[in-house]
Length: 278
Image (cartoon, rainbow, N blue to C red; front, side):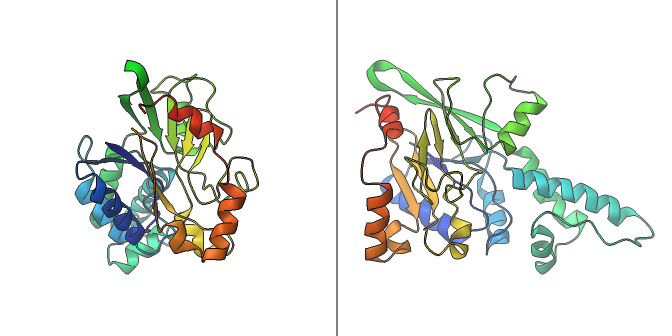
């Protein structure tokens, strides 16, 4: 079966635990990550090393490109230009987040040393399509992107790429019966918290759209809401979390969370389940 994994952001231990959890019940699992491996998290370099070793265009582990990979590549071009100047009187260009700091700590703050990483990021597509069996002999198609997919834009247009990497859309997909799987906007943010049929830090469903960015990397910054690294099976919509809600919250807080956010069936999820085999 196929499993999509949300934004990792250097949460390496949680990523490995999530993959192992899925493997224990499905040794033939195939994975598609939604990008954003770098920045913010505690083990960015370990994450980079793992994805460069395991992710391929059509193998067991696949991924689309995230906006944080794109930002790092843009910084790299600027850094190479700065490095090539004979008189570097100005300070080096700074990335938006902590990639330069991470590279320096690993002794790899050099264009030649960083080039294989940039070359790898360039191989990541903006969009992947997975089709699985549906109910009564039909099929269900998933469009997997980092941020969003715009069905009114040509597949290879510059605006489509921008939407794939950057667009924040939280209301759903009303333009196609394809299901968009995306991350980019953590479900811990104000765009979801307090909204009906939203489970902060967990997978959130909308009309023909599923957000799997549970904001794992932000958990330490938000005391009263749990963040998770999320995974979902495309054939069944079974959800996987690392850590689990039980591991994130004490019993009383967990009961309160479930009562507040998951006490009744989600109509968007139920609608999607009706399209999959029983």
